[in-house]
Amino acid sequence: MTVDVTIVVGWDEEYFYYDNGDEEDTLNHTTEEATEFLDLNADLVRDLEAWDAEYQAIFDRVRGREIGFATPEIEHAWFERGKELSARLKRESPMVARVNYLADGSIPKGTCVF
Image (cartoon, rainbow, N blue to C red; front, side, top):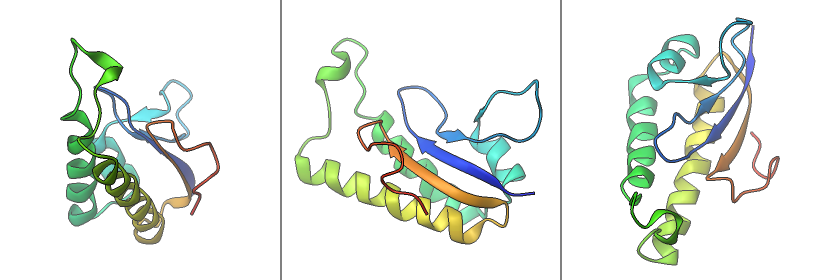
């Protein structure tokens, strides 16, 4: 069995979305669940968690969406790291058939598919 995975980040939420075949389960999965189900190696998990942590660190509950990355270059680098990590996920997981990378929703669906 292989699955299609969508990577999309949001404030205070998990970034792995896939159907694990359990009708009573949601499509959104924790890193721990994804690590086990998708057979992810520790290096990839560490890099994904660091990538997500960088995004979570810019959130400010008071100012909400008006905050962001310090510079457009830092934001661009973060988007590019997400693309690289999505490609690695596809290459390194025997369970992944396809990866749809959406970052924070600003990349249109289907734009970066591995």
